[in-house]
Amino acid sequence: MNTITTEIMKNNKLPFKSGALQQLLAFASLILLIIFFSIASPNFLQFSNIVGILLSTAVIGILALGATFVITTGGIDLSVGTVMTLSSVMTALFVTTLGGPTILGVLVGILTGAFCGLLCGLAIAKMKIPPFIATLAMMMIAKGMALVISGASPIYFTNTPGFSNIALGTIIPGIPNGVIIFFGAAIIGALILSKTIVGRYTFALGSNEEATRLSGVNVDSWKIKIYTIAGVFTGLAGVIMASRLNSAQPALGMGYELEAIAAVVIGGTSLSGGKGTIIGTVIGALIMSVLTNGLRILSVPQEWQTVVVGFVIILAVYADNLRRKKA
Figure (spheres, rainbow, N blue to C red):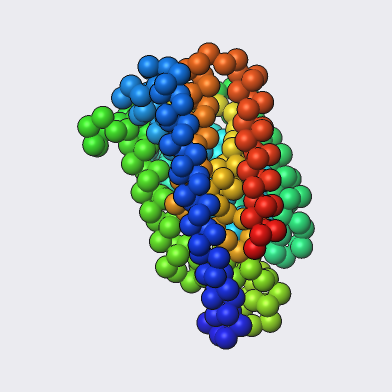
């Protein structure tokens, strides 16, 4: 890594206190939400409900892990929800219709997400299409392909009852496998982002893409790789979702991208790029799940839950704007 790129990385470490403060505030918000809903409803802190929160966090959380890489580069990915659905459908198609082994079906789902991420990366890096438009197009393509491949009908894993064990089974008693997979993916994501050259160039692209290009880095190649890595997380989320529901629901997925982006921003990743943290994203995903679960326990109507989530997204983006101004 040459001098210019090294300087970019040093500059990225300067606002450490600000990033740590944001994580602390996010964690404090999570604790306050837990306290509030615990007081409001005695059912909230029941073990079964806590496990349910963690399991619901697994899908949004894994989506948000991939989105962290993309947003840290200064990009955006609006396709994660429908690509997740397409990955679920492809897994179900391979396992049920084609009768393939479950392990290969899981691989097919993950590779589907990776392939969609690769296509987004190519469109952004080589065709110079803005990330918003490229991923918006992929969102529509993935949604349409999921409906076409499935015949617009759910695909159930009736003949493969063991498939649900991927998310709902328990290697550790009382803790669903989906939760373990989520935290395992978070650890891997954190190591990639903080300890590898992929993470270094992710921060470099978001901090100053032109300076990174002038330093001799193949910016286009790294963008493609980063979007592909994000796609791997999206494909994994699709497999977990299919296992959790024991079916592939082709009409599912729209809206998940907003919750994933909100989790990333709440956790301290800047929409302008250059700053990102996996730990913060995990906290942000937990906040979204606790909020949704708590509102549901309080019998808040679904439409009002959506309104509240919308306000949370606005507040998250506003807080990000304030952070950038102070920086």
